[in-house]
Length: 296
Image (cartoon, rainbow, N blue to C red; front, side):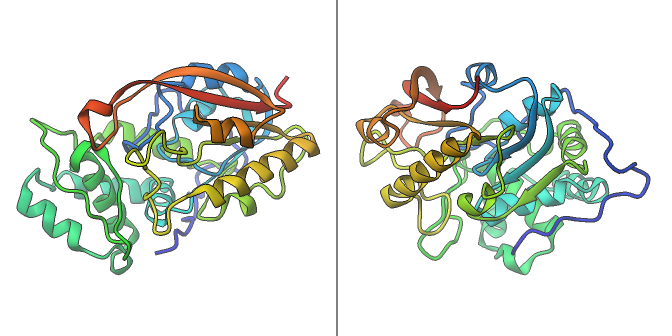
């Protein structure tokens, strides 16, 4: 189901800047940036004309920048249609209340989980699809989002004592952050999203990481994955933006392939602790890279 941006309330004056100081990601997402947030914010300018985030995921960087009022406009995107449907739905104050009401009725139960997982989001309303998406994310195994070759969500139920299915306070804060004329949510390819970027703008790329090993591959967050061909295309896009004078920052795994793709740019090695992995023994501290151009 392609996400559609709901109409904004007429009670809100056009162009109003309404920072949301406490909003945090509403979904757990492989590669989420809360671990590296301070390192990322330190590298980004205090004043940004347009902020682009084509792989928005849980949105930790966006919500932090929004709370500090560091951009004039923000364009958020991802090719994951279910994720972007959720962003578009939560941006509407009425729809977020409907999502909250629905989530409050959902049970942490294997039978209920399996029944909801089998539903096709394309057959659901935006509110139903968003509620399902949040529930499966909050109660599925280790917070993974994974689909099979047919595009069906196939993560089993997780083992939790008391998972937070509905964080209504945060969902309202999320809605407040997204419900601004200066914020747009798109379901589109990264190249198409950043085509209009100009000097004074900043693009933050946080793609599915190049795996450290064959078995640590988290590119199946959408049918087709994000392989070496896509990473090579992304690196070429990064260089074009840098040549135009656009501020660009990219995060990825610390691998020889990444070092080769971004040779010539400033590459900083940083440490992070990853909590999402299908193998418990492979969660823990890792080194990642932040690649930057035109940020100072």
